[in-house]
View 1 (cartoon, rainbow, N blue to C red):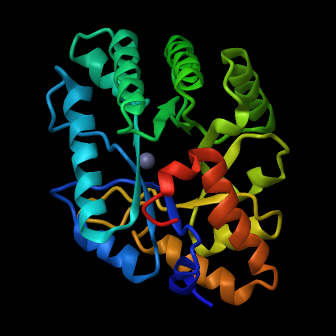
View 2: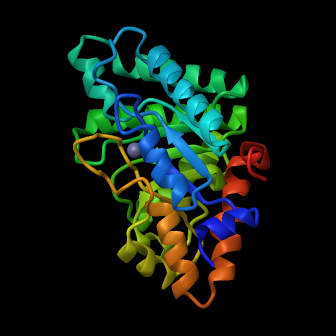
Length: 285
Ligand SMILES: [Zn+2]
């Protein structure tokens, strides 16, 4: 059994967090993903310093949607689109003399509008810078995040978080924030979760980097996770990990783990459909 065979049987082999650029490896990266047995990409917009600050999210989202269309048409795989203001956009707006909070909230409004029009499957990656920042910046980041959660509740879409590594306490606070916003915490996905986070008993979904060591550590705890590469499509590197890593790791798990059937039904079927909805996978289901 391998990823290609599993996808033939109607399972979802999804990279839950991938970036693509038309000036990156682009379809060469998708070729690698598909050849290894992948059949679904959650395409997340990638910060583009080459796009003007003015009307930034209009151009960024249009670009991501068009990349998604290209991949869907060329490969017939499912491509989910995740749009939203990246936490570090805050500093770019500030330097350019804009009000970051208002610009980023407008960015959320636009992502939600596109979700309501069926062009966006999730809000993300949104949240907080992954490194320590001044209290004022952190509190504004939380204000933007809470706003995003409220709008996700109204649009019934999940939210994909980019944050610092989370302690048990920090996870609990996010669950609280989601509940306060009226968003089910099961609709919150922590991108770049650590394998050890699986031992933390919260309803927030955990998406972990599909490296060999991560996957082995994770499976020693639970099979309740999604896999991602956070591939950024810079032709000069393979960061964060190469675009074929998810299907390769799925194949590894199918070969190495006795309980692979439970992994397949959880990670490659139940979790993706519970979070993103069956509709999002209609191209392959
Ligand atoms: Zn990312």
